[in-house]
Length: 124
Image (cartoon, rainbow, N blue to C red):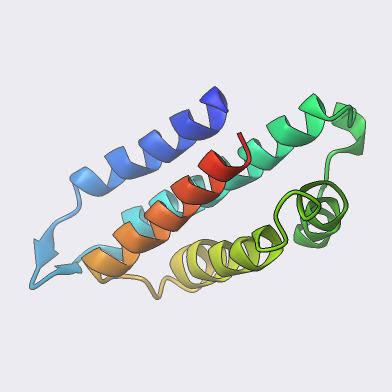
């Protein structure tokens, strides 16, 4: 999970230079980039887990639906909550944070990153 944690640390580093006023990030572009990188950290962690379980690199998911299926097949056996956690991460980091650029509250972004880190830790 070293690569996944490196991505997550890179995402956190991106946030350090963003100006904050009244607990709101004032520049959305670096927040979108950081959220995208944090989401990629989660995908990297899933990929690493799947490879450890014998899935070849060619069989790794290529879409969010593919990740959902692999989580159901390989991860939900260990922890049924992981599929719901992945959906939360997908909606917060990928859709709201990256795609729509809706996350600007400092605490909300930090909480989303904590959830991502917790997910990565659970599948180590």
